[in-house]
Length: 377
Ligand SMILES: NC(=O)C1=CN([C@@H]2O[C@H](COP(=O)(O)OP(=O)(O)OC[C@H]3O[C@@H](n4cnc5c(N)ncnc54)[C@H](OP(=O)(O)O)[C@@H]3O)[C@@H](O)[C@H]2O)C=CC1
Ligand SMILES: O=C1CO[C@H](CO)[C@@H](O)[C@@H]1O
Image (cartoon, rainbow, N blue to C red; front, side, top):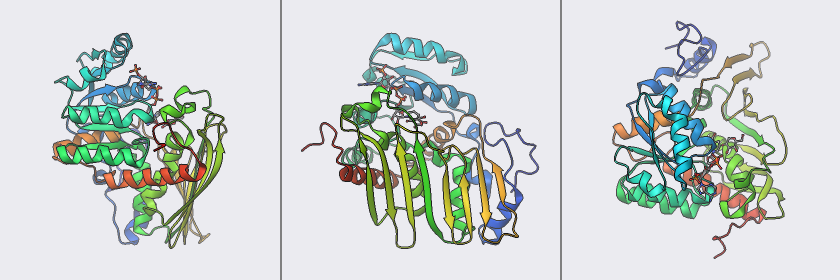
């Protein structure tokens, strides 16, 4: 089905503009007709879910704004190390709570024990994700853990092992994967619309060297876990786990990575993922196939537009305005759907994907010589 019968802007929780018929037709010609409604279900149609936010920082505020605004989910509680911070977050987000108060807890332990909380969103610095995910799992709660999933693959294995043993849902909050622009990108590549994918390039550099959680090695700072995880995850979503990883980059005086160039090699393809926290980049990505190139316009991890250009110059380029309001509602809706279906992992962001991405990040840091406190032995 196409969206051409829906005036632009009517599907305000999903798409602002319909996908061009020419793209959908290219997919059908390639033998894989694409049902956008099935691939990107409306977040408003997901089962309702009551979230508890663990760590009321910057992204937690975006989550608590976007999830109630654009999906059937709502935030019912927040936990902070400091009750006054929890209270002020709860006040700020009460209006979005669909008539329900947001309960403020002065500890993470109290948050995960709150009987009204059906799922926990871990939004703390990278080094603490494992500890906080385990806290929620031990309390019997399903968890959505901000990216990067954990400090390293060892921690990821430990967390996934506990989720598996307890039969509880857990997912890395790699929100880009659930955005319509990324779903369509993967579908176009998988259908062969671009020809065989030969090369992927993506960059994410932003001047963030003033951000405390990114400069501190004990919080697993550095560009890679914060920014580099996006291009690496994009490449993984298209090509899977690489055969070989090579990396070079610069380190700060405190020993975190300021930037990196990561090359991922596959039998039939290559990819270059770059990231950095002391420079500016276009934040674009290109997927270069044998017959066409797909460009994800800035920012590629929440694309404003997708453009396909063909090697056959007589074929007109196709551009789609891929913007959506919010963005975090898509991953939250996926959690709600998985829980309603009794699943412990998402098929879009499965545990194996998270682990393989973490293994790439580990290998990059090994080659750069970044060792976080606690990893020495
Ligand atoms: N999906 C996205 O677009 C984005 C994702 N992120 C991810 O979200 C996570 C958090 O990032 P962000 O919101 O920017 O971080 P912030 O620094 O804004 O917030 C982190 C929160 O963690 C809590 N915390 C617990 N222990 C510590 C500690 N030792 N030091 C500092 N804070 C601590 C704090 O809450 P309190 O002390 O009150 O309990 C704090 O508010 C990261 O994993 C990051 O990669 C970040 C930005 C965007
Ligand atoms: O995920 C993220 C998205 O972009 C931010 C920068 O603008 C990052 O700091 C953050 O962790």
